Image 1 (cartoon, helix red, strand yellow):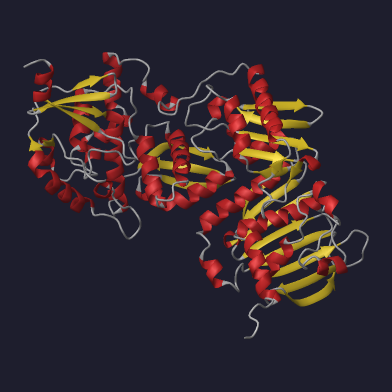
Image 2 (cartoon, helix red, strand yellow):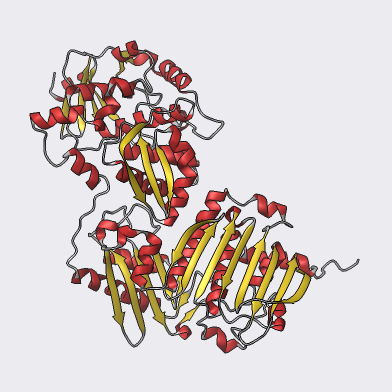
Length: 619
């Protein structure tokens, strides 16, 4: 019987190895930026086209390479960083395995230009599928330019698994931020399809954090700095009022290398204990300097997971340093996501309404959701409002879910008809002459022939808005209320990429936003539900809530958007409502296709039967 085990050809072996190192355009960005840093560059420019699928180019003014080194750099495990086994435990460079360029050359078309200081000419090399197609001498300035073109052109199956351009661009921005934050003394720029995304001048770490994460952090960073014989830690944490519902702005660096560590994140969360809401996450950018011999970074292909020789010491040191810094600034708890502070200020949640304020609120645009004008968005037959459903049998989650994926939209009218048939036997006529009661500015008590309902006003409004938004994406766009005085809104670069991805759907949902350059948008119009003057906050909160849903893979992009908008625009618990507003809210709830739960599965109301009350009192 012939032997069956054989060596793989180099091109196949290279593509297999490349699969661990280069998984998407962002992977190449990380490797090329780190190579530029290791080359001692003081200026690094990143250029991408088509979210890196067509082009990823990194240009630096580093040391450059000789003709021989330039050719050798594409050989697997060829590196200038280490030469013996002991060097693995003294690593201070970003790269050391010598895999990056070989992996890139195996799955893309590559052009390299490099010139070493002191040499008269540079080297140009063109590689296609790991094969050198061209090599020649050229005139150029000192430094290196590497262009990766047509990623996975020779592996169509891998290319098909790449995500949408906005998703891949967000990943590129994430990788760029991680490297740029590590080295504030280096100039960085990022250009996408000819548009500048970042232009980062050299400066302090605090300046770099603000440049990358947005001006909102300018006066809201707390310095962290502790030194010991074993390790040092420095950086910044955000004040508690900067905490968000997502983990996005959290960065750990060990010897200037970005790492992911749930263990160290737990240490920081412990330092913020009782200072932030339970389901929120603080911002931090913390740098740990440690003897390389005390850690192992060679445990994962991306080098983003490491092992500490004594992780308990590192944990305690990190937590103590953050606690000490927060204590110095006398910071106390200030955040509650359920009762958003900006909404509370607008809505006067903290105090019951006076008659004067009730009257003012009734005419406020915040309540236009309950006006006849806005009811027209989703109420087609006014006579339907004369009847409420009083009690409903439990319905499975499958029945309650409404698909909002493109091409699979449920017809809103058909959904309502299905709901009518499901609950027809349960219809009762409400005693409309009986006033509704609001309890604790949160619950609405509605009486019917069989008993009464306790309705949670925020949950009910979320359901109403959610189904209204579904209709908007099904071809019934929500009217845009043009702003008399358009606001400008500056966002962090990651949020700019995200907002650009959502703009087409937001247009249907009543938002008119126009890019204005430099990570800025002009808010030309919003739905009438959004209070005048609160447009910027509403959009920022919506983006934050969207990112909160992003880790849940069972939701499509549109589903996440609709849930985020419904949560953001819904009236909050603690809001005083008039009789007219309560009645409109309840009526609108009970013409929904799934009136008894929010989009996130929370109950909108609870029913109590009169005979149950009678039994409680021995009647």
